[in-house]
Length: 224
Image (cartoon, rainbow, N blue to C red; front, side):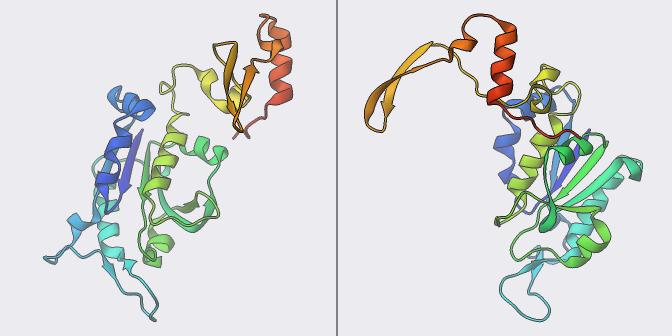
């Protein structure tokens, strides 16, 4: 599976892509991730990627042309069937991202992620180039780089071979409180020493009792 990120700040991805699950998936070549800078597709000496908006208003808007050329460049490198490729623009007006969407995207061969900046992206990118717009939630960030990383990790967890065990997927095992050694831990709680114990139901090796406890105290994640 291929991920192509379009961003004017490609350096912001390197440390996270070089760690944990993403690093292992890339090293195993289960997925490939590349970052393309729209500045490389500009024609002026300043590599301008933004302009003031028509109609006035604060801030600057990312131009359509450099983004368009960047997306086309990564789409042409390997001829992927357009039905197996999805182009995403991160936007505050987009569909709210969730586990169901993450699972759906894991079925594609190529996903192109367009990261906005400043006051947004020329609307023609959303209208004619992107297949869909996605938002992480009801809040505003300075750009689409963090959403791209969140999207990337959430999706690749569903790609076969990325996780050590299929059961590690939370929508399969559910989400519940977990504990590890020591059985009793003493620490400060609101300024007072307190002994905190592991729930009795988890200590006896009774799998039926453990499963019942986890169902009672956990919650499920929606499936695709």
